[in-house]
Length: 138
Image (tube, rainbow, N blue to C red; front, side):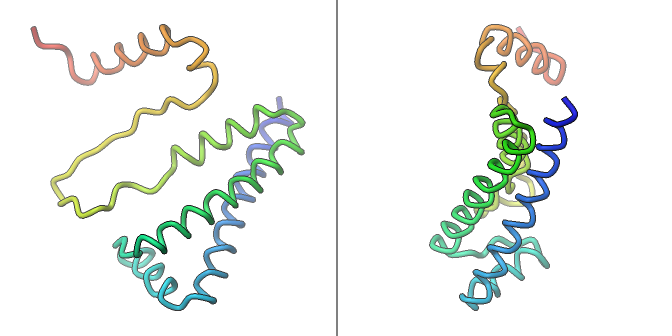
């Protein structure tokens, strides 16, 4: 149990370091990418071109693969990779595609194999949570 937690923690740290290193390398070799990256970090504006956004995704995936490998090696369990992937996906980038300040959104996390192995239970938990947040009106 401790080994699994340590694997996930180290994997998350490796992911952050790898993603940061890949994007720094990208900014050094592609100056326009660096300009758009600075805008995103400093002002929170997503101005990347579609090609740049694809390279962001590529950096994300490469960092995730490396982090998953590290997590699995430390934890000695494949499940650590899935937990790490769920954590990374849940912390993903918010929508930024021209929506106005009035736009509101939320995420429903369906990460974890146990949720897919027990679909009825998962749907029941989701329905109960939605009823607590927004009760049904008849």
